[in-house]
Image (cartoon, rainbow, N blue to C red; front, side):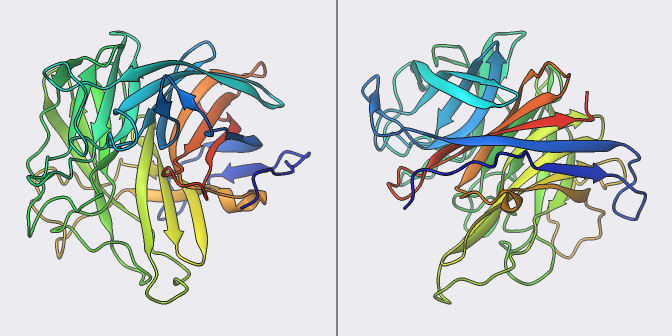
Amino acid sequence: MLKHFIYCLIPIVIFIACSKSSSDESDSSTSIQYINKITINNNKLKDSTVLGGLSSIDYLGGNQFVFISDDRSEYSPARIYEMEVNFNADGILNYNFDKTVFLKNRGGISFEKNELDPESIRYRASSDTYFYTSEGGRTEEWINPFIWEIDREGEFINTLTIPGIFQFNNVRGVRENGGFESLSFENDTIIWYANELPLKEDGKVPGFEVGNYPIRLVRQDIKNNVVLNQYAYNVSSLKKKPDPKDGFFINSVPEILFIDENKLWVLERSYTTGVGNFVKLFEVETENATDVKSFKALAETDYSPVSKKLILDFSDFNQRIDNIEGMTFGPDFPDGSKSLLFVSDDNFNAEQESQLWLFSVQGID
């Protein structure tokens, strides 16, 4: 595989001019401008850990970011990295891994292999703590997905009360590798998360037929541990079938970002054998969607999902796309636009890359 790329010298700008329609009721406008992309060098150890599996990114302040590795304590103990990323309006300049924090179980020791599947991480400045998700353990007795709050040293503080529908079951609940990969704070007391793939009782895994493949966007009061709302989001169908025909394929939601009242950004990334990776970012409106919090199953049920519109397609930039799973806003640029960074998970595969993509965003607060 090629390891080096020639970046575009002229930034590509995507203008999202919002017009009123059945799926888009907004009269605002947003522009997202591609700046550049770099590849993180994983061919070394950091604090005796194998670099890789970078599945999520969040902003800490200044030039500091946090990344979570989705290593299930297979290559090294489950961990997060605090990292310095330096960039300006012309692109990413350099990066440095500053600190490794090992995730600990309730007893204060590192997780055993497959007890944890860490995926998404968010920083809450008001408490100087992290919140992270686990898709669940792959031990003989499956561990259900969870969301924990931890301190900056990886020690357990608290757990969120998760609705019972997000548990492993032979006929209902979350699918294997389809639990929580996404987190986003609305404010200090409200958090959003979503299941990566539809619950078994809600719909099928996204395929090539146009149809409903709903996941649940969950809005939860973490101060009182109460779910406030759930909204159905339909994951897109895939376009090109695998080669060979029995090859692997997937499309799912690895991350979300809260934008403002009734508005989220939802990341979809797909992979199809013999075809490649595709990554798209959608803007979601919840205002006219049905609150499905009390719905035990979405299949063959009447409801209105959130509206969605495409605002960013990574295929537009003539760059190699890898398994992009994390996104965050960073510091503002001098012109007032927001920086937006994405990170890809290389799955500890020598044929894949840990990529950092940088964009600037205008038109949102």
